[in-house]
Image (spheres, rainbow, N blue to C red):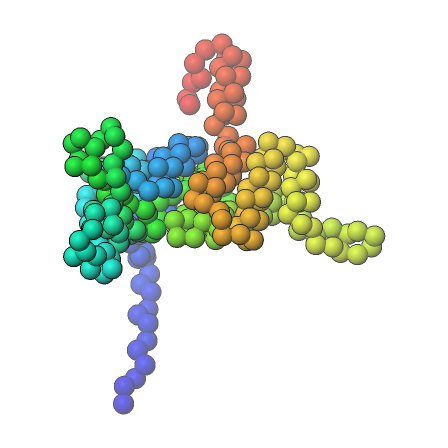
Length: 293
Ligand SMILES: [Zn+2]
C-alpha cells in the first residue's frame, strides 16, 4: 500500500527562487514598462501582419518578452496542401495554384533575451508585382499569420494600468490573428474593467430601483471626468459590439481598437508628462538644479 505523499515542509528562512521572467524579477521587464509609458508604435508595428505578406519581407516586431529587442524571422517553412501537391501533375499547372500552411520561428534580436516565438498560418503563391518580377521569376510566396506563441503584444500598457485590463489585453493579443471578432470582444471587456477600476458603478438607483448601467451609460459618466479617455473607450466599445454580431471584423479593425484603448490608458494612467511639469515647477521654484534628486 502506498501512502499519499506529503508536501515537503517549507523551510524557515528560505524563499523560492524567482524565475527571471516572472513579474517583478526585473531583468526581463520590458523597457516601455520600466519607463512608465506606453508606445503607440507597438500597435502600429503589427499592422503589416494584418494582411498577406511577402515571405521575404516578414516585419520585425517588438519582442513580447523584453520589449527592448525585435523578433526577427529565423526560419519560415511553407508546406503545400495535399490538393496543391496533386495539382502539380496537371498539364495546366502554374505556380500560383499552390497554397497550404507555414510554420516558423522568430527570435529576439537582443542577445540578453533571445526569446523564441513560434508562428503558424496560411501560405499561397501569387504573381509578383511588376517591380519585383524581374528578380524573382514572376512569383512571390505570401504568408498570413494565424497564431503566435508567446503572443505578440497588441498594446504596451502604462505601468499603473489595472491588472484586469492588462489580462483582457493579453487575451486579445492571443486571439487576434485567429479570431478578430473574439479579440475585439476582449478589448470591449478591457473597457468595462477600466470603468470599474475608475470607480464608475455598474448600476444605479433609478426611480427607487437598482438598475444595471450599460457600458454606454457608464462611459457617459466617465466623460464628465475625462472626456478624452471616455471618447476613445466609446469607439473601442463600438468595435467590440461588432465583434459580437458579425464575423466581418478584420485584424486591422482590432488594431484600430487597440490604438484607441492605448490612447485612453495614456490619458488615465500615463503620468510622465505630469511628472515633467512638476519637475519644471520645482526647478523654477529652486531657480536651479534640484539637490538630492
Ligand atoms: Zn526580447
